[in-house]
Length: 327
Image 1 (spheres, rainbow, N blue to C red):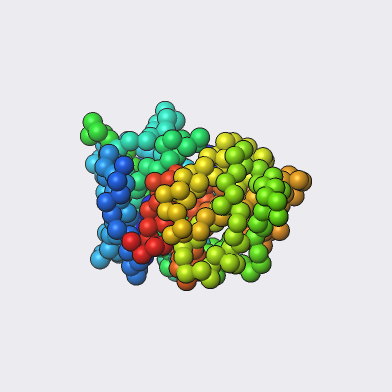
Image 2: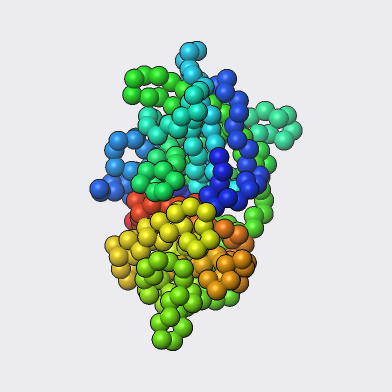
């Protein structure tokens, strides 16, 4: 399995995720993505081309990530509104003591499962986070992918080493739920067709994109999932999005579709009815999507292989598509 590595995107209240306030601790893709078993996280070095390299689970559940005694505090702000069992993408911001966003340095994330019996933590994995989406309207975020094998609270420890040698460390706790409102990785997409452009090509009936690409509205998810090709499904409504992130997410999807051509299906679905922006679309209700952007990747079998909440740039999306293609 691969691990990839405030207010949530679109203004959705954060559910089941707690911001960490314990500040006492602190071009070319070159990686082939593999489906590996276990709790693994992706590692990468900032400054190099983004990679998602599997790292094995820790061999010692009692090991604790330590930092120098003079480590400065860092605040972790998790941007997910929900986390599910299985593979998850966690996006987070880091803030220094002055409240400034940190976008550089080497970031290592260690996850600990909180044991229900004792309340103690058991170390699961440790690996590097990657900063994706610097060019997106929200400025991007640190991203790490991990696989949760139990519901309940998990501790997330982040250590940052900056170019000048300064070390920062912080902790946060996230709550993994056994059942989410949106489809989880490994499941089949909900039944029921997503809309396509009507005869005559009136894209305004199915899209609030400022420059819609007809190819994103030519195929339903039901048709795509039985085609034997990976499918990218993006839920976003630029007309009601509180920021420019929804439009940017669609633009990134269009760029990836151009890159991969007929090797994949790319589908945009409005979260809100373009003719009645106050109402969620039937597809959004079926998928449990209440705002956007929300991204789902279907593999060649038609099962959800990855999902991402918030804006995903073309670099990260390309890595996800490569994985779905078996690359």
